[in-house]
Length: 448
Image 1 (cartoon, rainbow, N blue to C red):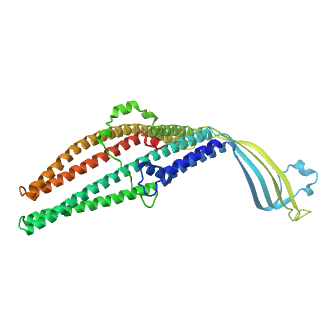
Image 2 (image 1 turned 180 degrees about the vertical axis):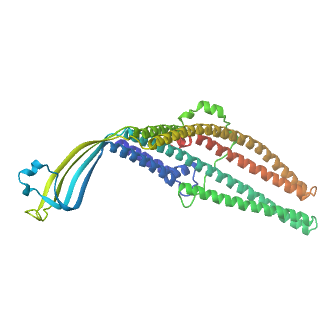
Image 3 (image 1 turned 45 degrees about the vertical axis):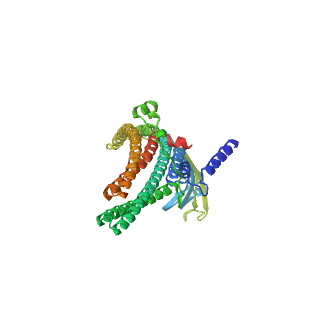
């Protein structure tokens, strides 16, 4: 009891620390903790585990049989005795034997399977494997939820940075447009220059609106995962080239025990379950042996032919027995069921192989995307510095009349694209890193 209270208190305190503080931006860890606590999809998978545990109890209980209360009423066209009687029983005083045309009965019946061709044993084993599969699904859905939250989180940060950069770019074009309009009034520039500046400004504002819409959609998606109505502001995650680390798929597969991953284990459990289903289907080839016992009373009013007509009588009835059933011929039905189970087992083995191949492919894809993002970030960082300098030079040349507005607009556009690539590559690196953690099932471990 003390241990339970200690861990309960620990979880509650951890949950309190995971809650966002008023007036402060939510961190990624807080978002993940909130999703793990509130997400209905994850809670539904937890319920599936509980259902599987109840199924095990149900199947185990079947080994002990069942106890029923049975009651009935039957009306006959001729009088009947309350219980079956032999001639010797009736020889002493036949007139005193109760007879009725309205027979009532009530009894307690107990039935228990003695041998089912191992079907009941297999049913318990299948239920246990289903429980383990439900637990594996819960772990995988937890990892999936953590990955989705983290990915949406960094994508929102990326879109916010892109929006800031786009708005800065649009503001710069707006100033250039105003300056061009003033110079057009003074006759220093042609109308075509103003049209070019206006066109680029309108395009920049349209792109900003699209980014704003994408940002709103992503925030709504993250709020849905967290099961909250309003999403707080998110704390920024700085992206630095020095913190980026390359990955290799082969080294990861050598270092990690891929066979120990939950998604592979789940397919292995599915294979074992399919094998048990084959054995369960074969149980129809064996005899079925059941035992039963009943104790009760039959009662009813004496019929009109009885000397004591109308008087209610009752008699004790009990029985016990064993019943054996062995199918001799069912026109191939049992054989067909076994064959279907074997095909399902083959499917399970192919599914496991498919999962392993897909995992290796996804690991290779994730590591390549990580390395590509690092390369793109370093390239974009260098390009951003150069285009920033180029834009400054073109601005000076335009102000001095040494170049036209086309060169300046092109320089600004190139700098904005380089800035966008830098932001995208940085957060794309984080997203792919989280994807690798998801494949290796390490995201959840970091949140425990």
